[in-house]
Length: 282
Image (cartoon, rainbow, N blue to C red; front, side, top):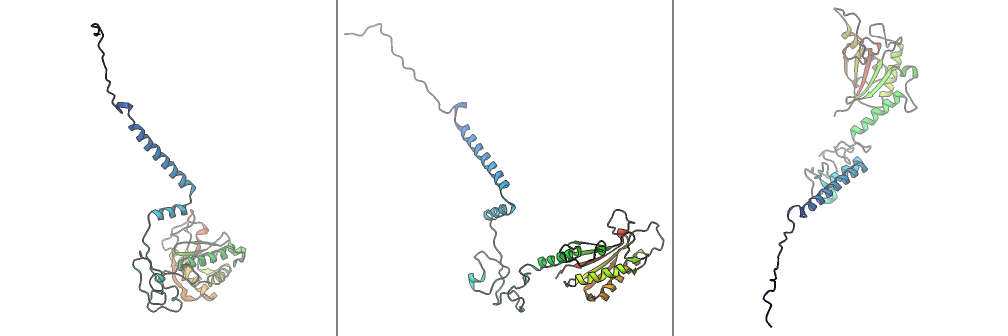
């Protein structure tokens, strides 16, 4: 049986599809996922910073950036028992007494000369505590004030980098010196006795400074410098007579009216003495 001559031909159409072409691709999804991941990490970091303390953050930072320990004082043991680690550098030679000095004293044997005191803290910390205890005694915070209420109002203290500054100043109608000279009043004698007792619990050196208020009239031959120095010297003698070891006073200066403590340079508050318990710089 023959095929029909009028049969339609069969046509096969092939369509070529390009995957990922144009904006129909999936590359943007990867970029978006990276962006979302980065944002999640950022907000997690912000939350951690807000939920942790400064000490915790420092510990985390030290964990990821460790430092090499440096042992300044080595013990009297051998090897690892001497306090050394495999990362230690600049370890001082052991001499068998636990100190870094070749001629260590009995007091220095167990602590070396690393600045540690026998009370367990550094010398600077112990000194700071002693100065603050004197300040509290003068202010009456401990309940055992060495200063009477009528005298306490003439005293102001502050702890500075130089040491404990004890200000003794005039009040209206209650001066520390008679007139404009360097003759002390009974009030100043009582204050000198108090300062001697309070400062006797420490051995710090002492500096004394004299300050004066400015005069309303400028004189051609003003004795303001001499007067401020004379008042400081008078108080130095009074402390010595009250029982203070004279060798502790290492500096005595007069500043005239060059360092007022209030805005008005002529205010009576600027008439003052400053007794400074100097920090130990050794």
